[in-house]
Amino acid sequence: MNWKLIFQMSLFGLIMAFGTVSLIPERTEIIYWIVIFVFCAFVIAKQCAEKQFLHGFWLSMINSVWITFAHIYFYKTYATKHPDVAAMGVNMHFLASHPRLLMLILCPVFGAAFGLLQGLFAFLVSRFVKAMPPVA
Image (cartoon, rainbow, N blue to C red; front, side):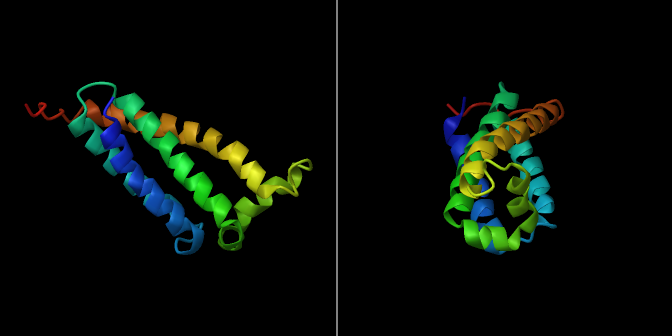
């Protein structure tokens, strides 16, 4: 596993974590994520000769850590810009008064789900793009 590459690409997740708090509206966020997913899948395919799926999966898991902590820390600002996300916990009566705890519980689940998607993207792109040979 190329953990250095995974960490470097996870900085896109860190940027998105802060960007979604106050700059990127909820309705256009998906566009940014699609561009990031495709770009990261291409980089993984070019840089990793094996385990492309796992690289994509762990990238999304690390991204979920950045996103979870930024959204929890800046929850009031985030909830103002993302009312649908803020309303998610209303139906969960035991967590309705603890939205940060709900995020802490659900974000790793979303990270794993998106990790499956990122891993699949990376795996599929690697079938068309050959990895660069390792530098000696």
